[in-house]
Amino acid sequence: MFLWGTATAAYQIEGATGEDGRGTSIWDVFSHEPGRTRDGHTGDVACDHYHRWREDVALMADLGVNAYRFSIAWPRVLPQGAGRVNERGLGFYDRLVDGLLAAGVRPVPTLFHWDLPQALEDRGGWLNRDTAEVFADYAAVVAGRLADRVPLWITLNEPFVHMAYGYAMGLHAPGHALLTGALPAAHHQLLAHGRAVAALRAAGARQVALTNNHTPVRPASGDEADVRAAEAYDILHNRLFTDPVLTGAYPDLSAYTTDLGFVRDGDLEAISAPIDALGVNYYNPTRIAAPTDDALPFTDAGITGHPTTAFGWPVVPEGLHELLTGLRSRYGAALPPILITENGCSQPDVPGDDGTIDDADRVAFLKEHIAALRRAMDDGVDVRGYFVWSLLDNFEWAEGYHQRFGLVHVDFATQRRTPKRSYHWFRDFLRAQSAQNTETWTWS
Ligand code: GBH
Image (cartoon, rainbow, N blue to C red; front, side, top):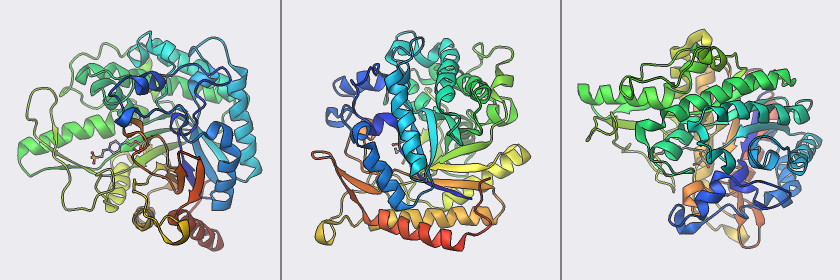
């Protein structure tokens, strides 16, 4: 069976940040600092999913998805990041997992989607190697409780974006702007992934994956300087977090650093522990030109000649085909089955007749990306699932509530959920899929 799902993340939907013993996360602190998010928006309430999860599970059951990718808030389970376990936090996810299974929806939890406990940030966050070790303890606690019912685990979400936005550029929590000084936060996240794979398996986890976001990189021109810059960017965005996991070695990082002193003996063995699937989040390709200063070895030249989403991101469905076939040629037999763990777009509300939301651009976006995925599978790429980002309009990080990615509209004043036209389209699509029940779409 192919996994068809929707995806969300804890801080973006749960709200209830002060309830049932939850500890503080770096996003609580960051979003409350003046000027960090658009209009000072925070995830304090978000979609109030913590209280409304039954309604949200019912929406998924009605949609007809067979899987749901959500994330577990580390500070709900371990308020200080390590040590004391908060039973009430764990209980929330226990009930959610049971509720999903009762609705015929497979739970696919991600252990870390950027909401680090602030207590760990106070000790250096991902710049501190110890964070990798306590992540494994956290993984063991959660799996000890849920592994009997969870078919598939994801360790980290997009460690590249967490490093780049959170540690290199200061656009996301914890707000550090260290540029290449952020690299230890890459290694320690990778080490955390490797340690967690071992901990999850020891606790009886059935299948384990890592989710990276990938982007096909195109040089701005054929000039050697642009081509070289594009290679450097490809190494940072596409290879830094995938080569060590699949091949046990870092790519050539000499454009960024010559000091890999944070890598210790045995780390790469731990990081390259076999995984059952690679999670791939796809949004758009990237166009890269030669650097304009000495800070980084590239500059983002921006894609032109394509329509854009409300966020300004280019819509390039064939980029998904390029990406998937590219991963297969890069890694060959070392590439495990792929899950598209996120794909979707931001679109403003378009009022339709009688209170509906007519998000025709999102319908087209999903259709075209699923068609590109299908072509990649026809070309032999082993893909086992596809998750739409996102089930609900939610807290879009630094953009607050200004970008809407949901299949379901959320009125944040009343918390009323209204399925959009894309929800109805996806439901019809899924019904047609299950009627066909083609052999290609399998997940064993
Ligand atoms: C994901 O990150 C996150 O996992 C999720 O939490 C988030 O809500 C969702 O996507 C939507 O943002 O400047 O035009 O080249 C996505 C990471 C990084 C992908 C920025 C697009 C740049 C587009 N994104 N990237 S562009």
